[in-house]
Amino acid sequence: MTKEEALKTYFGYDAFRGGQEAVIDALLSGRDALAVMPTGAGKSVCYQIPALLLPGITLVISPLVSLMRDQVTALVQMGIPAAFLNSSLTFRQYLLALDRAREGRYKIIYAAPERLETEGFRAFAGTADISLIAVDEAHCISQWGQDFRPSYLNIPAFAASLPRRPVMGAFTATATPEVKEDIEHLLALRAPLRLATGFDRENLYFEVRQPGDKKSALLELVRGRPGKCGIVYCATRKAVEEVCQFLRDQGVPAARYHAGLEAEERRQSQEDFLYDRAQVMVATNAFGMGIDKSDVRYVVHYNMPKDMESYYQEAGRAGRDGLPASCVLLYSGQDVRTNEYLITHSEAREGVDEAAAERLRERDLQRLRQMAGYCRTRHCLRQHILRYFGQDAPDYCGTCYNCLHNFKEVEVGREAQAIVRCVAETGQHFGVGVIAETLCGADTDRVRKYRMERQASYGALEALSQRAVRERIRFLLDEGILTLSPGQYPVLQLGERAEDVVRNGPALYMRTVEEERPAAARRQAPAELEGGQAELFGRLRALRARIARRQGVPAYVVFSDRTLREMAALQPRTTEELRTVSGVGDAKAGRYGRAFLEEIQAFGER
Ligand code: ADP
Ligand code: ZN
Image (cartoon, rainbow, N blue to C red; front, side, top):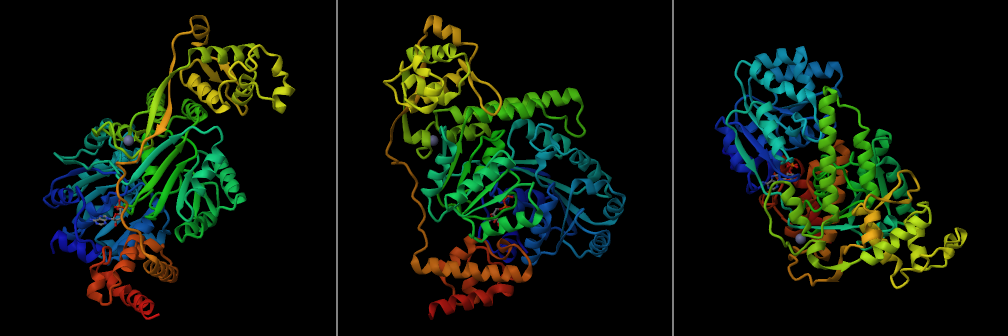
C-alpha cells in the first residue's frame, strides 16, 4: 500500500495537506523528523500513516491521558488496530492490553511518558518490534515550553535502550526557537527533517477590544451572531460561573466547563456544545483539547491569556472548517496584573530547582509582556502573531480589526495633566469610573456622595465624552503615568511619570480609532449550505448522534461536521459516490455507509 492509498482507504482523504507528505516520507525512509504545525493542521496523520506502512508497532507518546481514549476510538473506527496504555486502565485491563500488544495485534499504541519508566512496560518494549516513536506535544520536553513535563526527558534513554533504536518523529505547535532547539537536542533526534508549516489561518478575523464593561461587550458579540456557536474563554473558574450565568440570564443558551466541575457535568456540557444544544461554551483553558468541533464561528477571550502560544491555540479552535470565523480578545489592564501576580507567586515546578524556577518566572513575565503587546498594538494583528511565531508577514492583511480601521494620533498632553491633577487632588482614592465622571462634570450619585463637584478638576474635561476620558485614562495606565492599586476595587494612583507630566506637560501622543476602512480586501466566504441541504445536514447530524450514542463514542469520531456537510451537498446515492466524500474511508463506509445512504435517499423522496 502506498501512502496515498492509506490516506484514502483509512482516512477517506484525497490529498495530503501542506507538510504532511514531507514528514511521512522522512519517517518512512528511516529519518527522524521534527514537525512544527499549528493546531488543526493535521499532525496525527503524519505519524499514523507511517505507522500503517512500517512493519511492527508505532509508539505514540502523548501527555494527555484524558485524550488517548478518544484518539484510539477514532483510529479503531477507521479500521486501524490501536490501544492505549495508561492509568485509566485497571491493572487487569493493562495486562490484557500488553498481552495483545505482544501478540502483535496493534499497529499503534499510545502511552504517557511516565509509562516508559515502569518495569512491565520496559520488559514488553525490549521484546517488541517498535519501528517508530512519535512524540506528540513534543514541547513538553522543554523547560521553555508551556507545559514542561520532566518525564519527557526520559524518552531518548528509553529509545536508546531498545534492541534497535526506532525512528523518531516529534510534533508540536510551539514554534519558538529555544523550544525547537530543546526538542531536537533533548530528544536526541538524529539529523532530523525540520519542517514548519505556515502558521497563518487565513479565515480567522482578529480583534482586540478594551471595553469599559466586558459583559455588555460580550453580549453584543454573542447577539451579533445569532445561531452561531462560539467559545468564551475565561481566566478563572469563578469568571466562568459568572459569565455563564450572565449569558443564561440574558437568554443565551450557554454551557460551562472547568476543572472544578464533576466529570459528569463536564461530559454533559461538552456534549451539549458538540450537539449544538448549547450555543455558547464558557470555559477555562481546560476546555478544547481534542475537541473536533469544526464549526465554531467565534472564540472570545474574556480575559487575556498568559502568552501568545495559549492565545493562538485557543483562538485557533475557531473556524477549523476553513469558513470565516472571528477571534476577539477583551482586554483590560487588570488581566496583565492578575497574570503578573500569578507568575511571581508561582511555585517551582516539579523537577526544577529554585534558580531555574526564577529564570522561568522571568521568562513567563517576558511572554506576558509580549501578550500585552499584542493587545496594545495598532498595527496588523495577524502580522503580530505570525512574527511572534517566527514567520514573516506583510504589514497589512486587510482582514484584522487594525487593518480595517484607521488610527490617528491625538495630542493629549493637556488632558493628561488634568487627569493626573484630578487623581492627585482627590487623594488617589477613586477608581476609573468616578474619576472620569468627575472630569466630565457628570451629576451622578457617586459624584454627589463624594462631593466631587467641589473639586477644582470637576468638569475640567467636559468637552470630552466619558468614553474618551476613559480611553485617555487607559492610555496613561499603559504609559505608566498612572497605576491601578491591586485588589478587588482598584483605585487610580500616580505612577512614576506622573510628576513629569504635570511639571513639563510633554507632548503625549495617543493612537485612537479614526474611522472604519471599507473591507475591500476581505476574503470571499465559501458558499453556505442552501435550505434543503441545510435540512439534510441537520438530519445527518441527528443520525450521527444516534449512532454515536449507541456505540458510546463521541460524535466526531463517526464522521466530522465537514464530512456531513459535504454529504449534504453532494447527496451520494451509491457506496462509490459516498466514498468520494472527504473523510469516508473503507472502514466507515462499510460500517455506516448504508445508514447514511438510506437517510439521504429518504430525504430525497420526502
Ligand atoms: P493537529 O493534531 O495538528 O491539531 P489533527 O491531526 O487533529 O490536527 O487534524 C485536524 C483535522 O484535520 C482532523 O479532523 C483530521 O482528520 C483532518 N485532516 C488531517 N489531514 C487531512 C488531509 N490531508 N485532508 C483532509 N483533512 C485532514
Ligand atoms: Zn491585519
